[in-house]
Image (cartoon, rainbow, N blue to C red; front, side, top):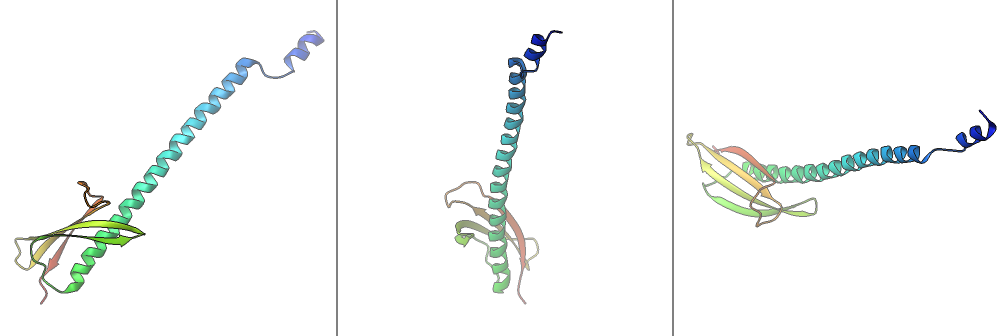
Length: 128
């Protein structure tokens, strides 16, 4: 090979090589961005679900600590947790056992939401 052909080859990358490298980088970055955005969405969902479950557990603990026999009915209310107002609906139902009542608590982000973020079912026994 002559010096001129060796100099042309050692000057740098060809346009095709640069385009292939950019394509590989673009695909890798797209995959990373997709993964990061999915992780952020999941984090928000899990945080929301966790706080809603804590609200339901707190409400159930209140009922169990009141030492009053809850009457079968539906009630609504709200509770603040993590600087957010959560709306709960509670259904107290009779069971086959006359000394036990079933309590279903649903927690929502907004009062007029049809879907609840979480639901908790528990049982309360008649105080003696």
